[in-house]
Image (cartoon, rainbow, N blue to C red; front, side, top):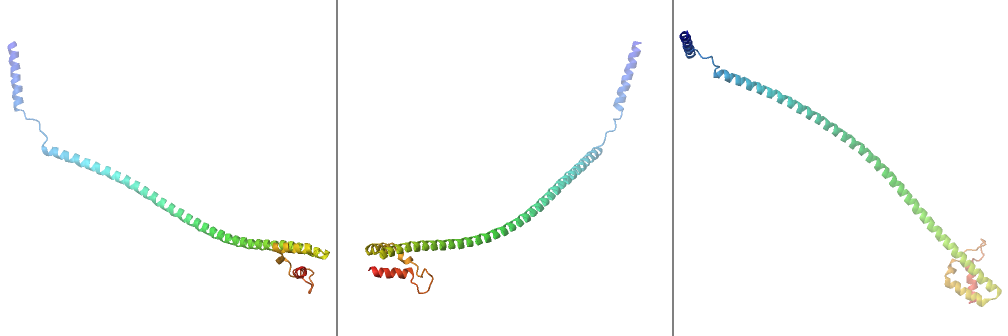
Length: 194
């Protein structure tokens, strides 16, 4: 049986070899099929890339629209702020003009008050000088009335040196017409002592 088994195995091997040699190879996919698959894959990738680009563009446009809207809002806010500041400037200019007018009025009143004060000071100085001149005149007249002519003459020289005779009143102190003024009385006294 060994031989038979061996023969059988040999026949089987030959039969397998014969079938392997004469068997048709499996149908291979043609090059055109591969190209079609590649083109389809490339088309799908292009389509996918197109939709992704569209989505990115839409997001960019939305972002730009939001930025543009914010920019317009900012511009409108700046215009409103500019208008508000312009109104404030106009109000402040009006206040400045009012204050300038008040300042000019105050300066005018101050100038009038200073003139009045200077006039009052001049009048006070004149009154003080007239009072001192009258005091000298009465003392000289008293010395003359008592008969102290030398003392009266010396006092008259001092009085003249002081420059006060010009401040003696030019009108009579009695207020009656025809009465001599202190200046006239002094001239008469001066002539009497000369």
